[in-house]
Structure formats: C-alpha cells, structure tokens
Length: 341
Image (cartoon, rainbow, N blue to C red; front, side):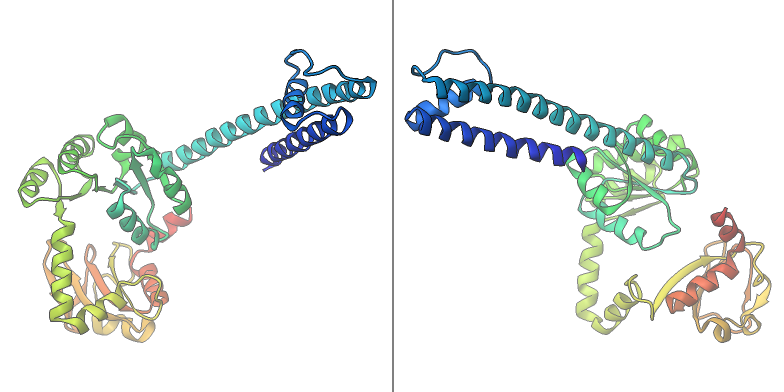
C-alpha cells in the first residue's frame, strides 16, 4: 500500500535525522551523548527551549539546518499519518459497502449465526459447495480477521437482534443455522428468526438435552448436539472402523474420485417419470443410486431398477464429483439456468 510505504519512509527518515543531529553535536561541539540527544530532540521538534550550552558559529549553522529539516520532516510525517488513517478508513468503508451489496442480492441463501469453533468448521463444509451462498452473523469483532481471511460474507452484530437478521436477508433466506455459544442465545435467536420468516428451515445447536425440547418448541426444525454427535462418532470408529473410514472418504469434499450427494428432482427434469432401468444413470454418469427420498419423507433404500423417478423426489447418489455435477444439471435444469443469469 502506498500509504504504508510513506509511513515507513517517515519512520526511517526520523531515525536518520535524529542520528545525524546527535552525532553532529557530539562532533562539532564536543557535547556528551545525553546533551546531544536532548538538543537534537528540542531542535527537530522546534519546541523553543534554550540551548544546552553556548554554541560556536558552526554549531549554530548546523542547528539552523536541523531546524528546517525537522520542520520538513514533521510535515511529511503528519501527511503520511493522515494518508494512512484516511486510506485505511476508506478501504474499510468501501469493503463494507461491497459486502452489504452482495448480501442484499442474496436469495435462498444460508445464514450461519456464530463463527466460533463449530460455526467455522460448518462454514468450511459449506464453502466446498460454490453454488451455496451464505452470510455469517458474529458479534465478536476479534473474529472479523478470520472471516475476512476465509473469504466469507459476514455482518458484525448480535444475531438475535431483528435488525441484524433483516440485514442478513432472513426473509428471503432458505436455511438458518443457530450455532451461538449458549443455549439461551440460540433459543432466543430461533424465536426471533421464526417470527421473521415462518418458512425458513432452522437447524439449532444444543449443549444440553433439556434445551432440545425448548429449541423445537421455539421453532427449530432440527436440533443437534455436537457432544452427542462426537460421542456417537467415536463409538462408531471403534465398533465399525472400516465403515467410518469409507464414510470419511465419501464426505471429504477435496476428493474427486468418490463423493455422495443428494439432488432434488425439478419438475422440468428430463428424468421425471422415468424408471431407473431406462434412465441411463449408470451408463452415462457411472453413478450408484443409494436411495430416493419421496416428498412425504419416505426413504427408498437401494431402489429397484423399476423405481420411477418423480418430481419432488430427492436422489441420493454416489460416484465421482464431476459426474455428480453433470447429473445435477439433468435433475435441476431450471436451477442451473437461474444461476447463470
């Protein structure tokens, strides 16, 4: 940055001139180090104190030059400081305006409330899906550098306040994740969010079992306890190490050779009302259909080759990442066209 460069130059020049002044008085007048430092400081800063000792003609000429140099240095340093502060503030304001504009244009996006340990890990998984748009709400300003380095859209403020939720576009959002630090905060957040958008899907974090019923009563669609999930995961790794290792591979987003994805079937899809045996999914995309979830919630595991794909179904498929992307284009053609626009 140009302003930072000028500020560093100002500091370097100050040290150089201070050193020249001190050494000059010691060499010309034969003063001690303390007297030379003191005289250099009051001369450069032009405070107007009297001379430390009587000076000769050479010393006075040196002082005159040091005074002019000090004034010029002061003006340069002052200008550099003002430039540094003004440009920093302008960058902050412009950066915030850019973020606000992006947030204002979000539709069917995810709102993640809380960017602590759980919230940040959650967002990293969301970032693995470029089509998924999200905004973070976090009131702890010390976490702003982390959010900026992660490249996420964020709003600094209390997620439980209506004004902050409205800024995040809750009325047009698809999902809200309540991952605040305490259960009380999450209950109040869920209540507020449900009032602002009765249709939004809310997933809430709970630290205690007793709070789960309160979060559900407040309007959460699903409540998860990180501690319970962690304990179950540890148990499964002990009891079924091969199964959990396989699932780890499937859900590792940086792998392209094997992934699992759930894809809704849009009404305009060419696969609607087609049997699996006639769909060509295996031949064209080399995918395995694990299950099909019906609109009423019924789950058809390992569906037969005569199962008919219908509008509103959700197909759970496994295979290579690139093939899953191509398959999604067939099942959700309207969403893809809307994304291009």
